Length: 320
Image 1: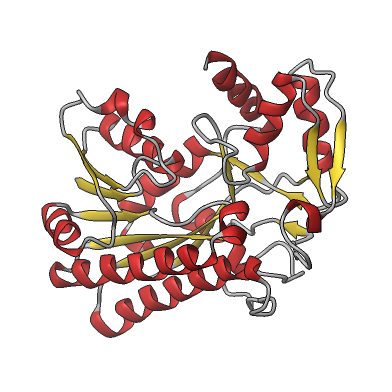
Image 2 (image 1 turned 120 degrees about the vertical axis):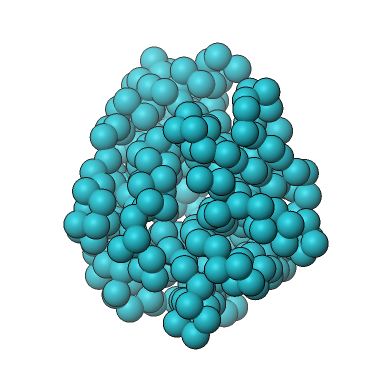
């Protein structure tokens, strides 16, 4: 197939491009490099069937032409990371909502399959763990910028599902949980690469809050495999899927495991949320997916465990 990846120079997008090319598919990438990096795709430039454009997904003539040339769109372009979301809420909302509007509008002209990359953030402050795709979403107050990202991605989902229902546009929505692996940076608040970088440098490992909040981490290769398989599964069209792992770990425990794996003597330091982000910052105490739906449809099971993921991320930073 011919695939367009918006945000294709980003962490997940570059791994997806690599996987599709390895399977013999043609890949086009568009990225404005605001959070992605040309380094992530430089090794792909000479590969047959790979094309890239440095531009924004809101450039409608360019996006229209790219969509017209491809069979499927993986829409990954978005504002990413808690730090960016808190510091630049206008950019977060405009990038997420308007970019998705442009992609859906032009994909609809030729009824091209569109994947909308959503997020576990849409579950908001819900305590109904593990999170199920049909569960209620519990958002925080509009005065808390932290929830702007969740709300903007929820709007993306509503819009995509509206196109599917009203205009028969084939869409698939994937809610990605904490996806980690090589090429991810801690620039915008991603926790694992931040911990690894701090541990390798001998700097304090900074845990925000009290460290009891828990997350489940999924290897980027497992996520990409799920995306490629879903793209070839007709039963996935019109559906919402969690993609993540069920293994749960507290952030304090993650810091300790990274420190041990890196053979580091770095102290672990707790930083209050108000100091790390902004006054009144709210966080999810737990974020764990129910993956029974995606397992039922494509047999998805994460293959790479957390210790192996940590080792790969350490190797990546050491090699750089």
